[in-house]
Image 1: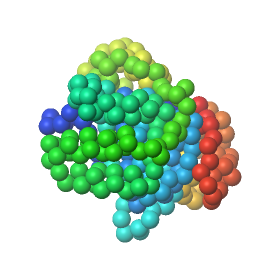
Image 2: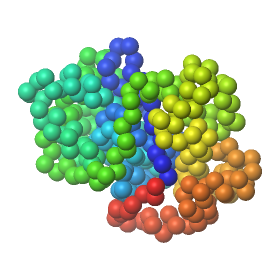
Image 3: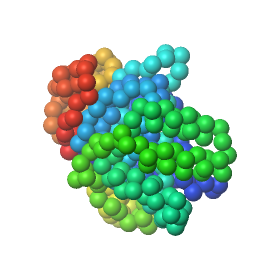
Length: 300
């Protein structure tokens, strides 16, 4: 299954992004970013998929992911039933690194840390606990204090002798021209919000402020797939999460992700995953039983 590009926007008062994501469950959304990503996952247990690594995660999971590495989390249960699953996600670009970090000799350990993030990194429990305090505090802080917090947590992670890589470098996705990302990003954001609905190309043309031919050409250049195939990946990705973490009938899941025709859902699911929805559900029950983390290849 090919990863989709997640488009990240910064606000006017910040050069990077802190996103506080709270959901009843974390869905399977196989994607990648152009930015560095530090994700702290709270009140959640399940599986995380990063490059060619599949591992279990628990409350307080902390991972630093370099640009272009496909990844997703997929929750199976919460820790506290009264609270939502929470992911605090910090995104910062290579331009931010070159402007803020590279010019300062005091921050060279961060540069080395980011170079190692090309394989994605996990961290030791003591460091995760300290980083958790810093990142959680940042949610209520203003832009200036958040920037200080970001540098503090990256310096903390850079000093962790217990950090370990997760994925092989071969799992990075190809880079794309930055000029294309902003224009197509609006279209991608719309598709993520409305993937269940019928895709109307004329509406996407208006959203992207492009001609019809330019939209198709630039979209395929950016994502390496057509818009129709991109929507199919979104729908199948959400279906994977429902198959793994619910007992809903397959026909109900098909309808929930936008397929009014069960046969069409089964055909597209098998085309992307190499197995039927029923086979997928059974296979993952065998692949990820209760027990220690497993390292397995993600199907492409």
